[in-house]
Image (cartoon, rainbow, N blue to C red; front, side, top):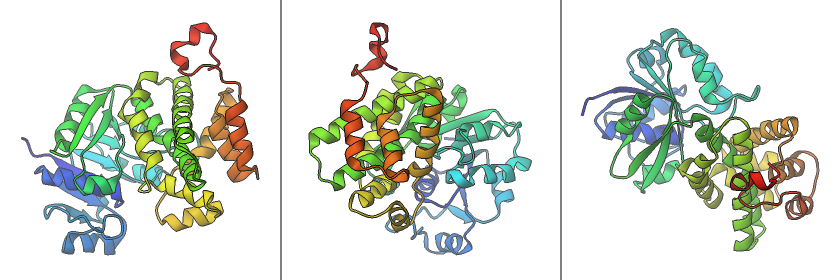
Length: 343
């Protein structure tokens, strides 16, 4: 195996888990973060106690605050930055990019300033076209604990997909590939909305029939929205769609699920987000997606109902009523469009 030089931008749980896998695979891995105390802790103790407190890190994984050095010395750059800071960090690293470098986004969200995917921000760099995204049912604490996990790398370029598969393959982490970058990325962003819905529902102790209905209709809404913007509906039957939705909507390890659970337990949105202590992308994603759905006339009763509940003073009863009495007729709409489906 050829040793590669990799930089992970971001000191959060998922970026750290990925950096650790690649270091264990024998690659030269640096992890950039702003927090000097966090850098010192990782380099001296081999722990990222804030985000992965029970996961010892490989001794060759080096944390740094020197962004320029990390970028210049890396062949592949994984951008694991929260969406609100993603654009700023990309602007900072652009002067040090070269055509041979590969950029991979692992962030599941949109540019908070306008409707734009992370891959579109990466593509603005004008120097390298080696662009991809990584997404899937990837709860970082389980990855760090060695639980069997799979993910999807999506890129227009086969060599980018092959490169990421080689960097991350391990006995406990497998990467599949896709050429549908739009679908994979939208799936990863959209499911955060429905994790909030499911967390809320679970706090209210709904039955398993109800949870199954919510998750299935969530998948329908996600795919309906994404197909409108050019995604392949089949992508949503795979790891990036159904797989990530199931994991995120079922696990208290999911930040967005926990936000929903707190709201369902009687706390307001501000309290719920503050309690998590980490970024929950679903709240910002919800605002962006509902705005776009309304603009394009897309039928998304769960997302629109959650938005009304969080920001317009609507009741939970109205969200449920909208789901049970809405216009949607077909179950699996992309195989029944010719019969008059309401898409």
